[in-house]
Every structure is written in structure tokens, then in C-alpha cells.
Image (cartoon, rainbow over all chains, first blue to last red; front, side, top):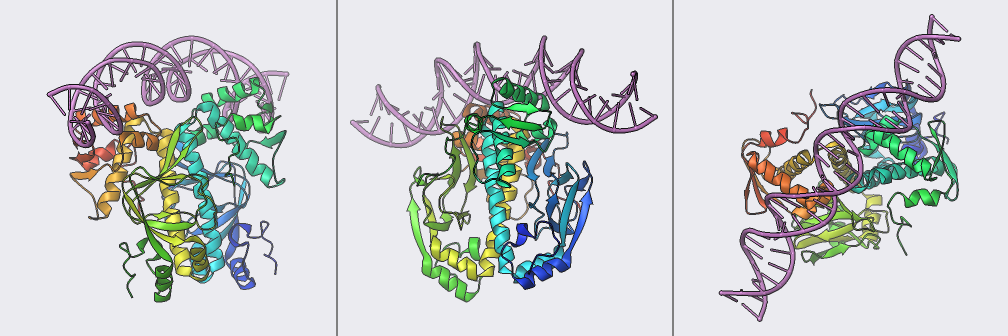
Length: 238
Length: 238
DNA sequence: ACCCGGCCTTGATCGAAATCAACCCGATGC
DNA sequence: GCATCGGGTTGATTTCGATCAAGGCCGGGT
């Protein structure tokens, strides 16, 4: 059985589901669209839905009273939104571009989790991936220089976009920045001026080339990775 | 049925388990102790076990080639260690004090997850809590001043210690710092000198009092919370 | 065509935290 | 007793990124 007409075919929540589970998911889903700039959910709002991004880009962020803002996550198509078992959103969720979300009614979805081990295991995997990403971010925010932060961000974006199409990455790569300089700053714990300066510096040093404001080419991806300050391999031996 | 002789009674992994599941956990568990300062697991090491902290304090950290270090988590009794479904540890795990761990053989534990919805749901909950903690940390690292970072750290430590004994928190609170100034610095993305200076500053301002190096009293916990830069309530309305 | 506003870049200056350096204190060993 | 050592504090100076400020680019509306 297919996953109905859901464009992402429930990849996010249900890559291993059985027919009956897919049936159930089909029954409780709805689609909703949000315009660029629209706030999907304010921190503290009651969450009535969980779901996944079908198209577009959204951000998770926290804001302090005085306006200082920290992005907590970047949501691309297939990413999951919301936390089962929690009544209110701990973060602001904002549509950066026009966004379509495939939503599941929260109560029903939670009931489904109770009875479907496949869904809860998949959810556990996804949550652990997010945890790893958040922890990688901790190193970036806590210990990296502005230049290293920018390089790390570009590398992460490049990998996320390219993994959707190619597998490995080498040589020259081209990708699009999904967000403005200001949003990058909020992501990296910098100001937009510093982001701009470091982008210019990387350009001057030939690490990246810009085509318009959003399209980035790294003629030598390895050189970009060098600038991140991470281990050469980034993976584990043996 | 009781959880056997496990001092923490599997609270971490199995607060809602059935007898048969507890039985199974009992069969695959072993205890292991580590001396203060000992590295329990290096980043990249093969993980043969998962488990939870029974006593003592351990840290999760990542280190860059040039020695810059970022702590990624602080493990206190009842915290879970390891990630099912992953072969190698992504972080260094280090015993800060003498530590006892209740370990489960990884393969067997993973098999148990497949068949036991209670365990995987509990694991999902714990992972989501860790994710929330990591995201709270992102705001601290990305946007807070040194003083706010220290105050936030103290407030978090106080809450974690006191929640084990009392429920709510108000008025004067006293608690112990589980780690050195240097480790605090690695946690907060600061240097140890800055940590020391800010601790002194908070002391001079009467926000905290020190008794020896490790024992901290906040005469007015609300005043300490004020210094964190967070919202007054910290929670959600309604 | 024009203006306007959002987004970005670049320059000058400032300030918070890093760095470099000296010293303190308590525990441990001889 | 004294030396030593790890952990902590405090001071002087430097530096990186924030802040303040001006101007450029581009697309959309009229």
C-alpha cells in the first residue's frame, strides 16, 4: 500500500509502517500552508497538531525579553515538528519561505504511538538525530570563531541539501542558503554584520564564490571543511 | 515485582515496565565502577554497553584538535548513557568523581527495545528531555553574557539537585558544584578565568555565597534567576 | 522612469571576554 | 618544618566580535 497522496510519503514518521498504520495516518492528516514570514506557532502556544514539513523552510527559535534571539533548529522538507506528550510549544516556529505542513491531530497521533512500535521507534531515531545535531551545534556556538562558525554552517547546509540528491560530496559543490544573513546570525550567535564580513572574507580567500546573495559555490569542498576547525575526517576510525 | 537490587530501580529506562521486561533487564545488567578522572569512553570508541549512572558524576564532551573543548552534557545519577542503534560513541565520556554505572549489553538491550514498547517509549521521553536541555543550552551559549551564563548554570545545577529532594524551589537554596571551574568553563564556552571572575562578581553582589570552593548558597533564589536573563516565569501561561 | 524599502556590505569605534602573568591557598608528601 | 602541586583568584593587556553609522544593490509598486 502506498502512503496516499502525501508528497513525502510519511518518510519522516513512518518509513517502516504497516498498512494499517498508514491507513490510520491517512485518516488523521490534513495539510496546511503558511506564507513566508508567518509565525506557525508562538512559544507557549498550545500544540494541537504534530506534523512534518512538506515543502519550504521553517525555523525554531527562542527569544529573550530584550530581543536577543537564538535559532534552535532549521526545518527542511521531511523534518518533524512538535513533541508528542507535550501540551505547549517551547519555541517559536516561523515560516521562512512559503511552507506546507502535513499535520496529524495530536491526540490521535499520540494514541497511534501507544499502539504502533514502528512509529515510536522511528520517532526515537529522529529525535536522537536531532539531539546529535543540537550537540554538534553546542560545540560550534561555544568554541568556534566567527569564521569557523560560518564555514561550519555552510558545510552543514551543503550536506543537507546535497544528501537529498547525491550521496557523497567532493570537489566543487553549489547550494542555496535558505535564510537571510540576519537569520544566519541568529543561528550562529553572531550579528548580521559579522556574518556579512566573514562571508566576504571567505569569498576573498577563494573558499566560496557567491552568485547573487543566496547561491553559494565552494570550488573545493575540502577547503571549506578545513575552515570549520573540525577533524579532517569528521567520522570515526575503524 | 521489584526491580531487583539495582539501586536506582531502572528508573531511567523502565519506570513503567512489566515483570517480564524487568526480568530481562535484570538478566543482562552488570555493574562497573570508574575512578575520578578516568575516561569511560573515548569519542570514536565502539560502544558495547548502554546503561545509566548509579552514583557519581560524569561528563560528555567534544574536543577539537587544538584542544578547545565543549561539554555536551552532564550525567548525574539516573541519567542514561549511550545510544541504541549507534556503533561508536560520538563523544568522550569522562568520570568526574568516582562513578558507578549499571550497564546493559548493547545487543540484548536493542533486541529488548524491538519487543518492548514501554522501554522504547521511555527512551523517547528521555531523549526528548535531553533535546530540550541541549536546546536550552544553545540559547545560553549563543546569546548570553558571561554573567548570565554563570547564573544560568548555577540555577540549572540547583534545580537538578533539589528536584531530587524537594519539589518546588524558593527563598534560600544551597547546593554543591559537581565540577571544577575549568569544567564549568568548558560547559559554558568561557575560560576558567572568566568563570572565576564572574563567580566573584556574583558573590560581591550578594547573589551567591561560597563555602569552600564547591558549596554554593543563593540567599534569594529569585535574585539568582533574575541574573540568568530568562523570562521571569520560565514556563508557559495557561 | 522614479522612489522606496528590504537586505546586504563596509568602515570606525568600543567593549567584553580572552590571553598572559603573577600570586594565593589548602592538601599531600618528605 | 618545607617543597610541591592542583585548583583558584586577581591584575594588565590584547583581541575579536559587537555596536554605531553610512552607503550600495536590487526588486516591486506606481
